Amino acid sequence: MGNIVAIVGRPNVGKSTLFNRLTQTRLAIVNEEAGTTRDRQYGKVDWGNREFSLVDTGGWVVHSDDVFEEEINKQVQIAVEEADLILFVVDILHGVTDLDEEVTKILRRTDKPLLVVANKADNFEQHPLSAEFYSLGLGDPFCVSAINGSSTGDLLDKIVELLPEEKAEDLDEELPRIAVIGRPNAGKSSLINAFIGEERHIVTEIAGTTRDSIYTRYNKFGLHFYLVDTAGIRKKGKVNEDLEYYSVIRSIRAIEYSDVCLLMIDATRGIEGQDINIFSLVEKNKKGLVVCVNKWDLVEDKSQRAITYYRDTIRERFAPFTDFPILFISALTKQRIFKVLETAKAVYENRRKRIPTAKLNEIMLPLIETTPPPAWKGKYIKIKYITQLPAGAVPSFVFFCNLPQWVKEPYKRFLENKLREHWDLTGTPVNIYLREK
Image (tube, rainbow, N blue to C red; front, top):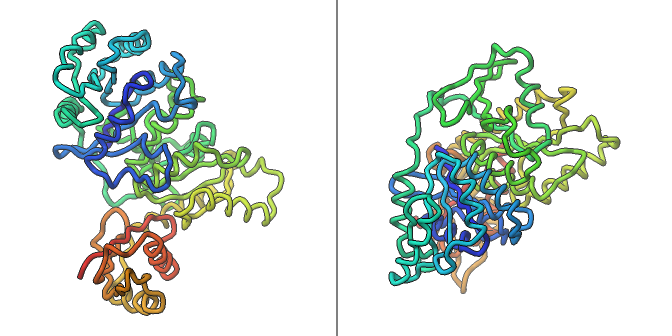
């Protein structure tokens, strides 16, 4: 669970091309539909029975074309702190540049596994050029061509070989795992402290996880769960905290380890791009979600109108997934803190919900008959039978029909909305599959 591999390097060496090439081992992950560039900065790679997350650090920099050493240094430092393995991408046609040397200075200080990837080696004649990168003193350069894919399989073999072994967690599977995520200063630590309070003894640290302590066992008010700590929320990193993309790479681990995410939004600042970035990570990992609008005690206008406006705005910005609870809380004054935990538990229950097949067909088939999928080239699409797949991470439903390939996204959304209208699936994503009978 949860190894992070980070790609670093100066601009224009082909980091994103390499990223796209490596994550394409499983296309489903990078969803280009939304047309968002940020989808290309984080993906999952499945290779040789190992799964790891790949992060292209360059993608989160505020000005991504920024060649300023300082910006690139920050990214590299973050990668060094947070990743389990680093891919340092250089350009075989340009050789070693001043910026490459800058990056090298930081990388020399880390003892984490590291590969120098000499990109743009589009044919074997160019391989000898990579000898120049020995001067960096970071080991053997690995020649690849991200554009045509040559040697990228060998690169993946090497990555998997170097990744640290994963320890099995000693966890009670039945307990929900809840992560508190959000931008810096949205009040994550205050919320965690409000949950835990001063009574430290109800908290047991679970060792044996990849980092300091990822899980905190929590048993209070009759609720029992694990709090997934973004390792080191409590210790301020060496990199100063205002780094926005720092919070994203940090959140990745917490999100992947959890069942339900509490996304904290600062009521005094409204929704910002970074909130949407973090939300898209939750969505991509198909996790349960509760949005907590924190610092509500500081907002002047608390009228019903203001609340409605806030709710609508959040759902609008996070669309198309809009069926999740939104709570207005204050971690400082502990307003509605308990409600947060209750809601998270309810969302966790929804994720595990099983709907009997008979009930599904009895309610959904008549609805489908009234509003069938649009005909395609004069062919009618008939959905005959529905069932829920055995318990997975997310409620998943299979609709059996004669022409599954012609059922388009909008109709799948219609089916999902109907399911949500009839059964409480609030806060959890839903998978809809169409199969041939």
